[in-house]
Amino acid sequence: MKLFQYLLDRTETVEDLDVAERAIVVGEMAAQVPLSRTPFISRKTAHGDGLRRELTVPSGASGYALLYEIADPAKVVVLAVRHQVE
Image 1 (cartoon, one colour):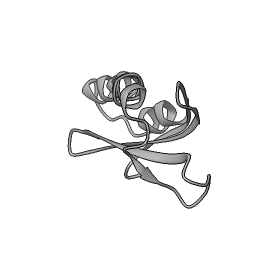
Image 2 (cartoon, rainbow, N blue to C red):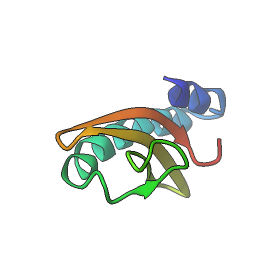
Image 3 (cartoon, rainbow, N blue to C red):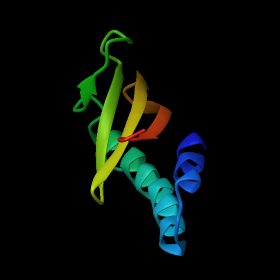
């Protein structure tokens, strides 16, 4: 996963490794809970005719952005996860 590698590249301490692992957990939780209940609540992106959206997930001093597409009312596909400062 590109996000995990990005965070690993920035590690300077053992605690930073925990941050990288926590990013994966935060992304998975955000994708499972909010997106499964209210996929249309996040902001629309410039592409995808309203079906491609971005969810901001706060974590620590910054957070993560999940780019996803609503395939149908019962299916959401996460296309990318990135750190907000990336």
